[in-house]
Length: 306
Image (tube, rainbow, N blue to C red):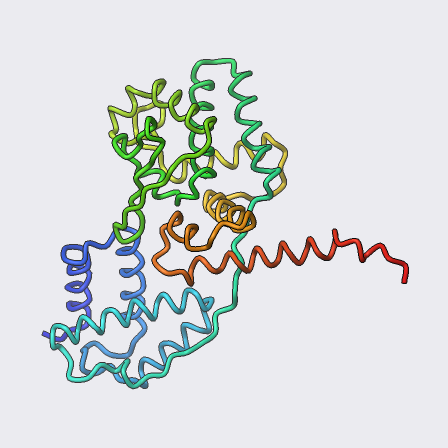
C-alpha cells in the first residue's frame, strides 16, 4: 500500500525500533513529516513529483530560517530513502532536484568569563547564607550542576541523563552518552569541581539511589533540563547580571575558552563529541572575533598621534 500517511507511520516506527533514534529526533521527524503530509498535494507516494517538492521547499523558505529548512528537507529526504529501500517507488524525486542554499553563519553565544565567575560566586554565597537546610541542599546541587557544565562543556541533555555509574570521582572521569548513542569519556581537571561533586553525591545519596540518575531534586526525581534553565535564571538574577544565559552557552564558553588558550581544535572536537570537525570549526569564528576586538582596542598603535 502506497498511501503516504500509512508509510510515514511505518517509517517512524522503523526509526524508533530499528534505527533506535532518540526521543527528540523522533519528535522532530514526526513534526516535519506530518507537516509535509498536510501541505503536499498528493496522498500517494507515486504522485509526488519533483515539481511538487520544489513548491513545498519554496514554501518552507518563506516561513522558516535556513537552518530549520535544512533540517526539514533532511527529514523528508530520509523518508524517501526509506521508500527506495522498501522499493515503494521507481525513482526518488529528490534525485532530480538541485537543493543548495547558503546558511548564514550564526556565531555561538558565549558567556563572558567574569559573568561565569560571578554566577558561581553567587551560588556559593547563597549556600553559605541559606536559612534552611532545604535551601542549602538546593544550592549544593546547583553548584555541582553549574560547575560540571562549565568544566566539561557537556550538553544539558547529557548532564540530566548521567547515571551514578557514569561518574568516577576517584579517577576523575565522566562517561557521557552523546548524540547517536556515541560515548566519550572526559577528565575533570579541577580540584574544586571534584570536591563539590563529592559533597553533592554524599548529601544526595538517597535521592540518587531512588531515581537512578546522578542529578536529582529533593523529591527524589531526576533533574530536568527545565529545572536547570530555571536554576541558571535564578542565579543570574541574584548576581544582577542583565544577560540571558542558557545551559548551552556554557558549552560554547567551554569550547571557545579552550580554543583561545591554543588547545588543538581536534581535542576540542573530541571533548564536545562532535562527529565532524566542521561543526567544531564554528568556534574559530568566535576566536577570530575576539582577536579582532583585542587588536582593535588593545594594540598600542591606536594611541599614536601620527
